[in-house]
Image (cartoon, rainbow, N blue to C red):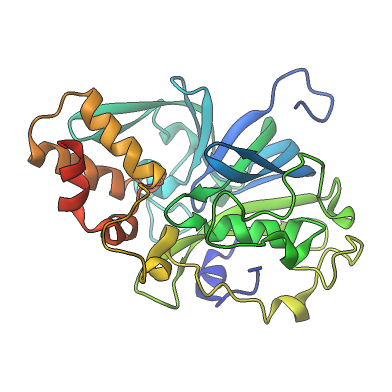
Length: 329
């Protein structure tokens, strides 16, 4: 059982193609908080395109340890949700009613301003019931950010703790097009972590700069039962852990998906965050002509834990009214 509470309250000790012989293509996977997986670290690499730079993390022989894996048939992608998100219950809570894998909805339906988004159930595991993990084979996860806010806190943390560059992996924490030191596509996974089996999950942590929470990734060495942290040098051979070094590692700009780090930015941004662009495009595609209906969709998206759009992002853009007004320009 993972003690999520210890990670939520910790002030930041962790900051900082086909694989494994399977004939199946890697699953494009997104994690939401409190839905852990375990797998063998295979490759970490930087990538760049017109949307900016992102960190790719490829893992083999991956298993879902707790929660529900759903498939998005429209995009061909996969997303792991916690039981809290799927049924509104945490099975690990001693006072919670019994939950079994059979309780997972075959279709996870999200309502966005009167429209429905459906995810199809693939697997479900209840760790509190001592269910065996289920195989989801090989996966690749992408960590990036947005033009407005730069790379996300989770993206920067993973680049620092997993790559041979260490802290030097992040060269500009405010520019999504120039934040990574290496976007060659070469494997920059630390040598001591190559093929190591790790637990990988996210928690929601309290920002030290606002009352918001942000998603924070945890990578835990399964054999050593210790967290993977920033190494002491960029040689790539410093061992899995570096607890003394990591204890001093902080993420001062790690607020909810951008947050107050942009407090000094102009009130009328020149760049529209991709998540807000997606919202505007969705409203226009659906032919919305009622601002109240568009606003209802906006707040539904904010409430969706698996969505990139956050209340903090909307506030930094100028508020809900400013975002909705863009739909009708």
